[in-house]
Length: 116
Image (cartoon, rainbow, N blue to C red; front, side, top):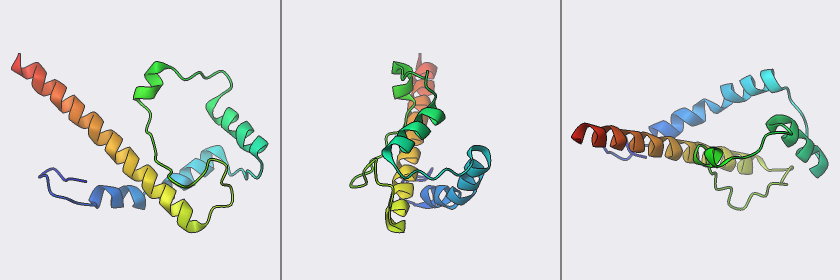
């Protein structure tokens, strides 16, 4: 990650990582804590969360963050703490990269608009 001066830094990732705990607590207070132990429960929970009538549109693809989960499978319910940590770091890195790309695109569009 680069800071505003273009120097290599991990500050943004560290700040996101430090906010994972409060975000998890907020999620639990709004969504509750649901244990999922079977594929059927997983699928049902996903349908409830996303909604049964929600279709993914072309617009959704451009505003979605792709997270490289590497060796962790979507049906891995008994993850070791190290695997959970890995996924949180991967999610934080992917989110920062996504936001940085969006910011750079917006900055470029502003710059291009000013040059006209």
